[in-house]
Length: 230
Image (cartoon, helix red, strand yellow):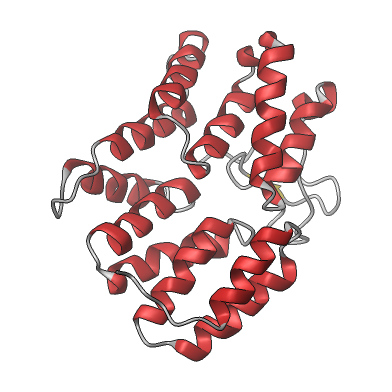
């Protein structure tokens, strides 16, 4: 994984997939964000867990500034948002294939195309092609948050394997603390594994840091409600 972003606050290096400084936790910016502030605004909402706002701004930028689709950075950010928002796979693949025309060997674009293809191949069968592909991506890129979430949530909700889902979701949330869909899924895993004290504390922590009132209420309610998977 390349480390081509430097934190303006503390000088630490990081990769484009992280977005937040692993040391001082400030939102990191690139030269492209400085020239196109809208990308920085979208990233800030996304890293803050305000997924709907990030998605709305990304769609607006795509419509009002079609030239933004020439930006690899914007495409990668937009794709990550769409994956977390459960956007259509056809849209995600189209964006990536378009970006690959100008960057045919770019490892990040190729990896996210792999993630999108893997998601399309998930089924109700254990060890299906999608599951195997996501596990391979994670072995190669253990900080790919979207791959961690897709595999962890699939193992939990579809295969009903909370124990296997646990490590993927915990790693996902460790890397992206404001990924609230992953947080909610992890809370459900904790409850399924009878880790009720951890689940309650975790939900309360999520509620305290959420800025969206609906997300805050979801975690507050979940902290005090028994889990029902039926």
